[in-house]
Image (cartoon, rainbow, N blue to C red; front, side, top):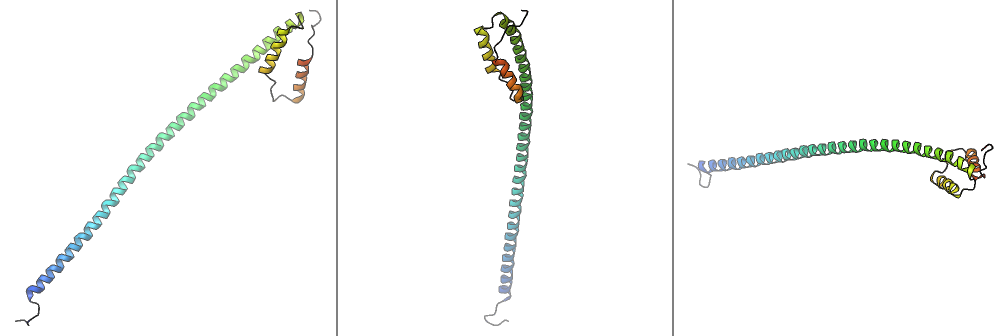
Length: 154
């Protein structure tokens, strides 16, 4: 038999079984921790992929809206430019028509107040083009300031 106070075979077997149980529990805890970390990583990657998809969709929508607004503005600017050109032609035609009528009226009544008021209104509404050379601007100003005399033969 064994010495008194020495562990018996059953005691040793119980210690080994306890150690195996503790090691098994530690192994299971380690495996659970690794699986938990993997699940967290997978969940985070899924969330990031979902957010990336949402962000890509949002940017795509934003780009489409910006492109539409840019195209719409280009159409509107073109329309305004065409309208401006048409109005400039209309204004030029009205100015020429006025000058033709005014020339005849100056012959008949050179001191006509309505004619002078109309000329002032036109001069205010349609000032000389700022791109005109200075000498041409001065010459036109001198013509406007000169008294209008009837032409010979009228």
